[in-house]
Each structure stands twice: as structure tokens, then as C-alpha cells.
Image (cartoon, rainbow, N blue to C red):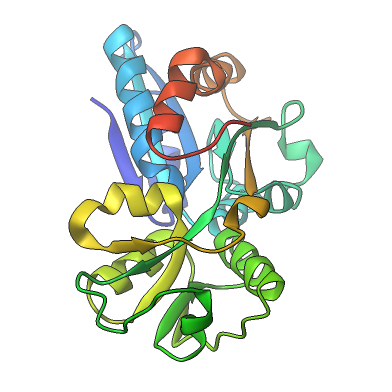
Length: 245
């Protein structure tokens, strides 16, 4: 059964788990993925495991910058998927087995708590209400600054988070009047938040790359990458609100 591991992984735990669960017939692929991929990657992993009962797909979700730090620290993983190409480019080429492949895009939207207590109607309102954003070093934060600059809106966030899920959580909990998150995360939140269209967001997209890691199991890693980039995986991603590559 697939096990989703949230947050930064303890390297010792990963090392203990790497290479299977003590059963020679079982195979394990460890995937480090951006937090915004939680829902579609979980579904893709479950499909892979259903097709092959001897396969375990272990998923670890976090902010893309944190994932790169894990790779740089030597975390034993097979696949890395980040929320933008700039973050993937920070990975030493020697740590990758081949070139990363873009498999999806995403854009931002405004989310507010149910009932919209801050009466947010557009991006301009974000300058005058308690707004939470991703930190600039995180792909969703860099994209937020890009869109806001295009709209000539200056936002002084009440907090800057390390992943889009953290932004979403604060807004859903009513700890902020608004936040900027990916369309796919807003969709996954359901009734937990209300969504307001972010002007010009379609002109500012993050492109998501996935890569096989050099120190991992190349065959199993490629199998996961193929599942993500194949027709069924693409349908899962698009149903989750992500765009085509």
C-alpha cells in the first residue's frame, strides 16, 4: 500500500526504507514532489500500485526548495518533481539522470475563507487585507510576485509560507483574509475556501518538470515518470486543475 510522507524526510528513515521492505519480490520507488502535486500524484501512485501489487510508491511532498535541499543532502530518492523549472535548475546536473521533462503547468488564483470576510473582489484588494503568500524562494511565491508586479499591486503579507499547502491552510482556517495559491490547490480544497479569479493569471504560468535522480533506481523511476507523462497520468493532472505542458 502506498505511503505518503509529508514534509522534510529524515534521511536516516529514508535510508532504512530504501530498496524495499525486506521482501525480495517487492520494489519501491521513492518520489520527492512539490506540495501542489499531492492529490494527482497520490492518484497516479495508487493506479501504479493497483496495476502492480509488488510495487510500492513512496511519496514525499514539500515545498520545491525543501525538496532540492533534500537531494543536495543526499536523500535516497528516485524521482524529483518541482513546481517550476527555476528550482529544478538549482539541482546539480550530476544528481540527475538525463534532462528534466516538463509535464504540467499551473497558475495562481485568489482564495478567501468561506463567506469572504475581507470582502476581497480583485487583486487590488490584497493590498489592504491580511494576505498570506508563499515565500519568494518558493515557486508559488516567485510566481505571485511576478503576477502582482504585472498588476501593479503591492502586497505586504502577514506571513510567507514555505509551501502552497501552508498558504491554503491559513486561509481555510481563517487566519488570513486572502491568499494566492495554485488553481489545482484551490480546487482540491473544495468548500474549505472560496475562489476569486486573479487577473492576468493565465499569462503567468509555472511549468512543472520531473526528473530521474542519478543515485536512484533508473528503471523504476522512469516507470513513474512515464505514468505521469502518459495519457492516463495527464488526464489525472488535468482533472486536478493543472494545465498541459
